[in-house]
Length: 530
Image (cartoon, rainbow, N blue to C red):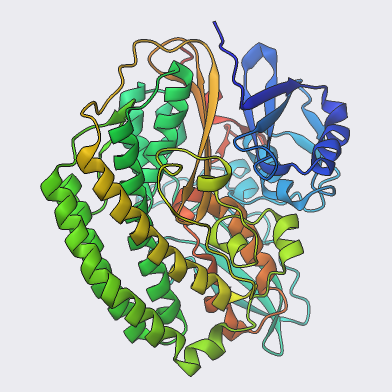
């Protein structure tokens, strides 16, 4: 039996009313979060448009839901109304073959450039003499979304010394000025969402944790929070404090690495070396608490897996004491470097009104003066029990976004100190028991280092989810990154990328092409149905 969700309203509408409904919500001050689709078999294709009213009402969310005919799935695009729907609707086109009418740029994000030729041409045959396979050349030459004409085309990736993850930027340039940019993703997919739908909830915690190495606690926490909402359980206070501590320690190490990479990408390599040296203090603290330096495995459904002892909190406090001296000194050295300031100031300008219109989140939004932070707008864990404030800057450029991360490192250290003190005196229970899950659905958000992280989990009453959908921060900020590159100098591209701090492994998806047909199917339709 479904239980009412006071902070989540699901409104089922007709497909032809989507533009009117979205316009009405935007006029009321709603912010669009994501759009997802699920192939429900005979019921059709379920499409969800997610909105939130965090500014007016904390934790208030609305899902506009519609069902499309599987044989002829057609929907009107809302991208002309709000550009925040751009990539989400392009996902619907690729993942489910939905016809999104009126979309201004219905090009693919994930598929190979020559995917039609790959799956429609004849299969290569081995030579009977040499037994070697002679590859068949494409029927048509490869093409992408860039129209070069008389302009110069510069590739950036898919493998680049500054990024472990693969991404492919192709820029059309005229006189060192970037005129147009095409971003190609899809190099890092690991099928985690599909795996989540085939394993029980307890195993899914570990899958969520492996989506990202820098914000793994936030991923496992979002999944756990959505399941706890389904089960209607209250997480013990000590577990909430421990979760807050882990998230902020993770934010510190992630931001320090990001700040160091800004120096690396702008020619200030010493800045990266210093950042990594200071970051080791926080890595030592995470290792003492969890036993690991990358994935920590402490989040459990209903609480935390292991206690954080007084000796461990004292060790963390000793590391924070060291960092309270070294971190401000390091930041002052960075901000006093004239060359670095020249590379960041007035570069990649994202005005406040554009940040709001494009759906900016995380440090990208706060660097443009927007007070968007899930920890305040939709409080979770123990953030209401500690003293802290949102860090913002009004510079709207790469330097402002860097300063936001610097300020958040200092603020996170302040939060960690409070959590360590409170954990020592918090009551003993660590986990709330979860007996069974009803047939229901829930969403959960938290503020990862790169911004708002959304999980949508639907239960069918068994020990495995019916489906899981994840919208990571980079899904929104990477689209903004492409916009910021247009009109900048080629030499400023690395600075813009580093100020956005993208995580492409979090963002990647996969699309399955069925047989020799030029049609795309959802992964949910493959394999045995439960």
